[in-house]
Image (cartoon, rainbow, N blue to C red; front, top):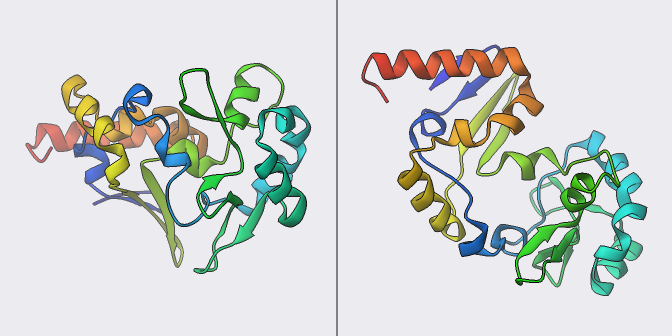
Length: 193
């Protein structure tokens, strides 16, 4: 592990390889699991504000869930997460003409219809950020639905932290990410990566 400011980073984030392969997985990470994606409290208002821009992209079932319980709920572990449809799909999912699951929020952002990209936990996947007292921990999360991303990451030699450059900067800032890169370079120089 390395520490930058109040953030402890698992070495797996530096050594493991990952590169999303949407053509292989079809966006399964948005439709599998037993709960929605983690949401930070300050993101709830942003999710609600984005609804008019994405409403027509959502399924009728997703709209009904949002009407009934809102964009988020508290899961069995006490975490705030995106609402889900039929105990599975995130309410913000939509599908493209190839049958790939996409994020309606990201789609609207890229089209210039909203200023909110998507929850930072989604943007950061496959890492999860946890809080332990005054420290935050950044850990690599392994999930079978991402096997194709691991294979492609190995083939292209893309470490997790490089794949996640943009969302890590979004979460922790440019200066923090530069420190992470320097730490990775030093660990490589020492033969630890």
